[in-house]
Length: 271
Image (cartoon, rainbow, N blue to C red; front, side, top):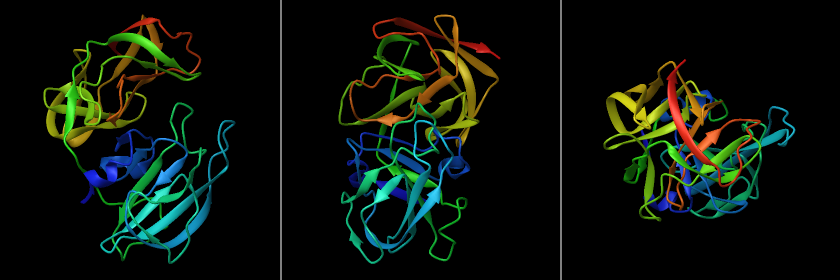
């Protein structure tokens, strides 16, 4: 288990351990960190071991090449993706130093914002393999935000809308959508295979008062549910932890017809 401390997360506005379809995020073994702007602050300190260009899926909205940065932190090797590196082997990096510019990678779904992907390996493990990263803990307290499933559209893209609810009660501190008292949900509900619970929890979790899955430790298995917004089907909710305001949940639905200012009510149904 590797802890990403509060001092590292302070350089980012949001993070997620589970909001990804890729196996690297299974069981919270990688963290996506979302900075302000186009530059990628380093979430770790150490010596750059290598950088490598890797192919990415071809998407109309993204580039076909991504990049891997390997950094020796002294205890582990950090694997960083989605950054066009402005650093090279033997460079010494401090937390918060710019690693380069963020890349809009073909690994992203169209509703995903640019971010820094971070994972850790033991020094004797192959750092170039996509699988095999260590579980990650976050060194911050996360406040659960209650939500009744309603809100107004604050932002609207082609594949998603962001609501103005729930509101962040104390911007600058970390908060996420409550799955039950004391527990924050993370992940894509239910459009990705599973999600996460912060902190660890066992038992049912809910969204807008309706049960959506079961937590076992940090891992959440979604029940056979579907979500609707004003009676219209949506793919799901994109769940994360944030310290910026307003918080607001993100609804995933390519081709939606919602507009800024629309009033939304989410309902949960058995699929």
